[in-house]
Length: 275
Length: 103
Image (cartoon, rainbow over all chains, first blue to last red; front, side):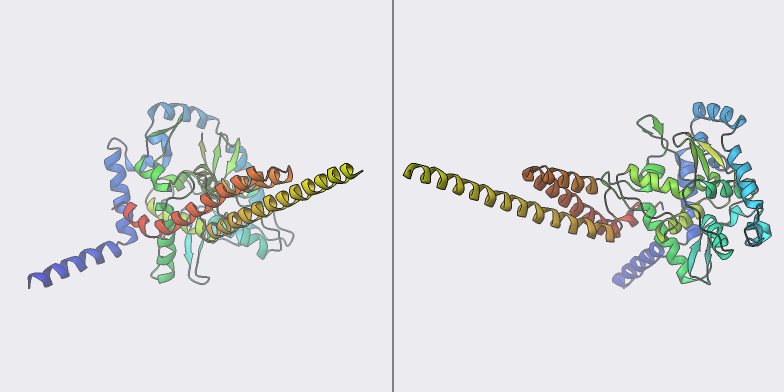
């Protein structure tokens, strides 16, 4: 009898660990950061590293007065509204004419069985209308994405994982990528932005993972340019001395799916300005 | 007259030996580099390639072109070892990542 109880409890524990739902993961994620930075309100994580570094926050507020991403918003608006050769525009491809929808991306598309990001759909829209796709990491796509994020400011991130085993597999795939160490330095995304968040790495403070996707695309001073989230993934992978994977490839899209789900409930404040 | 033949023979023999040595060095370089490239491809297939490997193979090629096969072999061996470490990392992380998940 005692052995049966032990086996049952063991099985229940294993099942509990194996069947942690995405919502369980998200709540544990939020609680982790609440415990790590007890003085920081959850809503403030949309400000990235500036939520946990008061000195840098003051400088950032001043930068925001003449935000370096404003030109990208203006360019993005113009590109967004300029008709394709066939007379259609981006607005024809997206729900609500593409305005105020950033918070719903990425999403799992049950028709194709894959995660769709905003940038992926911008290019799908172009190709559907006979235009050449844009590069995924910077340039016009970052501007269009910046404009679409700007029209979504204040909207609450609401990434959904439908009741579809393929969606769950994509989420788990992204989660695996996030927690897997890679590169010669043997670092995972979580090593920097979860367990070492707030610590200094050379002259920079490591930002907390919670809230990361709310403010992309960003104008990054290091780049002197705008960049998409996948450009940042690319850079992070290079920094740990790994060969980066393809922007908008399955791995990075699934990674975005997991990372963004972890920030569900926070508001969109993109585009952002970062060091 | 006889002395001239002896010197010429010695020079031909030395040249032949040098040629053989260079061929052996080049073969060693090719073997080391092929092994490095094979290991690199395996790490890339697993999507775990390190970005330090391709530059080592490139430097090895430059050293071989300059005739420094010893350096080329050494660089290719280093590239192979790093790629093997990347493959081992991929296999280890396939199981270990779960223990890092925030719970």
